[in-house]
Image (cartoon, rainbow, N blue to C red; front, side, top):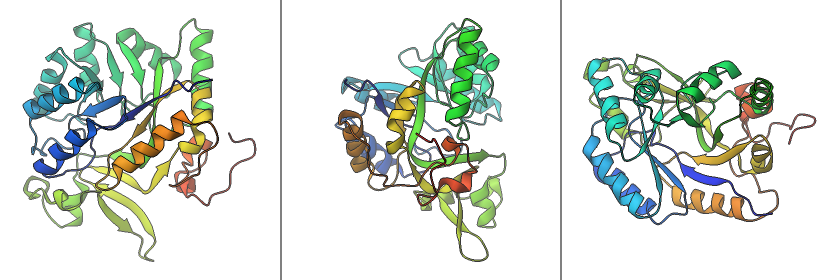
Length: 303
């Protein structure tokens, strides 16, 4: 049976120079991805590209046959930031990935369908059902939501007469763990947040942190904290499909994203269990996050 799962390129998590970002997305036009998410989701101070630049890229990628979605900030703190979200919602040509409830509200008021991003903090079927009523058409579960909870959510929704929306899961990339009003990168460099100098542009894949013993621990990316390992969900393809996941998401990296996309295209098109090239996602298997190392044992009965 032919695999019907789609492949997406998630929003850029890091801060890259303007020329680098434009060149990256113009190359994406020729990549075998079905859906492309565009926009700044981490820090509103990252302004190498403005709203019109993202829209221009959206038009180019849409003309190349991609389904384009505009992603909103995960943490909206100021009226100016809300204004950008409002412009994204009101542009009318592309669906929005709502990463903050302010974006959900704006879409609901206008009767617009939207993608529910991974930072909406949905953990029970009633919250998910409310979002579906508000217009949610595709849901990206949060980082720590695993297979068991997805199955429980689907069963509870169906028991109440509802249905699970299309789901999209991060399949390759560092797991976003937390967001804060504080800028972790500025703090690490002993700089005030308002005078950060945009130093995160010096770290195109985030700033790695280690424990005092020198063990890799976390990756900091502005106001976002990520895991240190690059997670690979390719071997879980069939288990994801069985849970109702219809889209596998790849998070852009500074190097090698084209090769990752090509590999996942093969993963979706060719039967068999793919070899694991990145780390194992412990959350998916109901284990602590640190159990995401590729060497961690599979739990009994894991798919």
